[in-house]
Length: 88
Image (tube, rainbow, N blue to C red; front, side, top):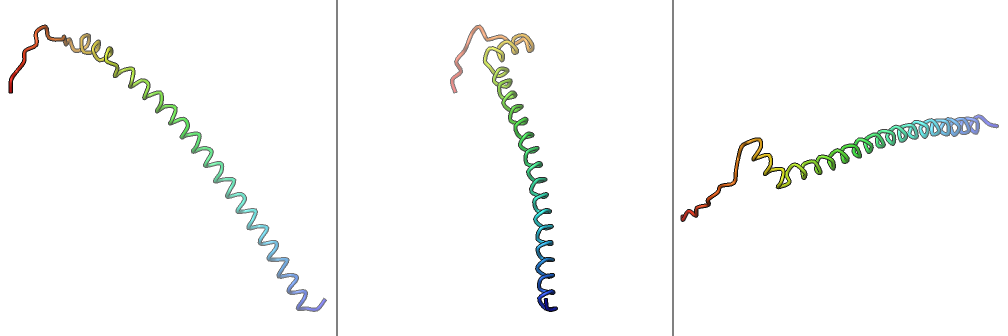
């Protein structure tokens, strides 16, 4: 093998090794990003569950019967017995 061929072979070998190392680092970074993505998706799912629960709770509290009962029991409010029409 001549000196030039040997240098070309060593350069090709060095590029192959460096390429392999770079692929290894890129693969590791992709795995880390995927792990982070899964954690964020889990957090999003939990937040969506809580939002749904709160929507149901809000609908129950805002139901007409609950508003009327709360107004009567807590605030002492009553519907008027007489209603008068006021002309503008």
